[in-house]
Amino acid sequence: MDTEASLGSLPYVPKTGRPVPEAEPELVEQWRSGGGELVELLSQVRERFGGIAAFRLGPAPTVLVTDPQAVQHVLARHPERYVKRSHRARVLIGDGVLAATGEAWKRQRRLLQSQFTGTGMRRYEQRITEAARTTTGRWGGYARTGQTLDVGQEMRRFALDAIWRALTGHPLDDGTERELAAVAAVATALPTLPADVTDAQDAVAADLARIDAVARRAIEAARSGAAGPDGPGLLHVLTDAATERPEYTDQLIRDELVTLLVAGHETTATTLTWLYQLLDQHPAAREQALAAGGEGSAGRRQAIQALVHETLRLYPSAWILPRHATEDDTLAGYAVEAGTDLLICPYLTHRDPELWPDPEHFDPRRFITPDGRPAHPGAYFPFGIGPRACLGLQFALRESTVLLEHLLPVHTPAFYSTPTKAVYGITVRPDGPTPATLVSPLT
Image (tube, rainbow, N blue to C red; front, side, top):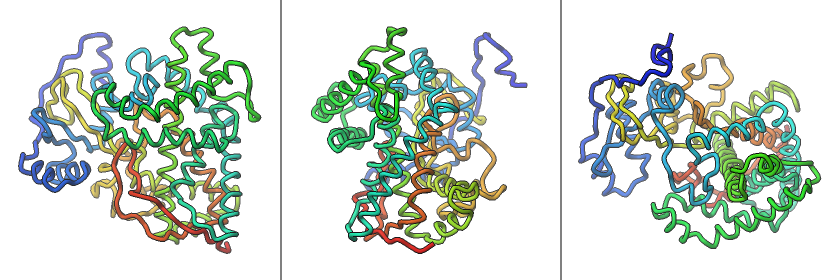
């Protein structure tokens, strides 16, 4: 029995624990002088001090968490002790469910949750399929003419079409696509924006104005009752909620719309871009997936899902998850004081050689064979775990799986060059364009 849970409403009494091991200042200074990515420092801290370790970028220590049990403790067992703080994403998504906290977050998540499970997902799967068919047709044209395409741009185009259909019931038209490029522009810029939200908004004001204009038109169309050719969408759920829930103002509906646009296309597009680059380096993985069964078979779908999961292991949708301790706690035997900032890092947990044999190697079989992956839920969490796990997890996985079911048998991108550097922003994305031509292998 969980003793802490059994205490019910009794106040939580902090435990004691040993001090968290802390990286020496010289390690941090060496990293600063080299101008490397944050992940390089975190990797060194984890390698030298283990799955729970502290480092200082300022006067107060930050605790890095990669140990699976500690990950589960923070994200799933006791999320009330480790909260998300206001962050730069509010510049783009405002008070959307991704940034909301407390009772507001609970209300917003409850409304959206039903749309991404069961009947809701079945309704949107057909829209994802239509977006995949559109992409497949476009790629057929590229293959016939030998035209160069940018795989990353194509994946963003597909994922944006899929989520736009789910939101509005309409396919994505060229004009809306151009305007919504502002979403990706702001999302990419977020890590470099000023910490002050007002200053940050000023820095990307033109892009935000374009986003707001698209959102305003979509909300007005949904409120008028006009459904798209695919029927009502998620946006109609939000505008309908406003008739009974005064908190669903136009501003909050806009924030939820933009949140769903970001979460529904940026992460999926990045995952698919990495997946195609990995297949370019490991072509046998594609052949194995197609050989696992015929078109539409359970075997092929499982093999394609394994491709997606192995890509997410190497390049998780959210590579780092910041949290803030609201009270004293004991984390895997270590004392964590209230006010401590923590960084949970799926990227490093997923590459831990103690959890994953040969962790840098791309091997989708990990997600097919019974003993291919660690059983602990804190060992693989590309979308987070616990109550704040990504609510669009199933939508994102269906997007990737459905597109690959359409494209893998008929088109293979041959990259001119494969980026060797990753950029660690909101997502882990390839550095630069991803130009390729298409070949249509005989299978």
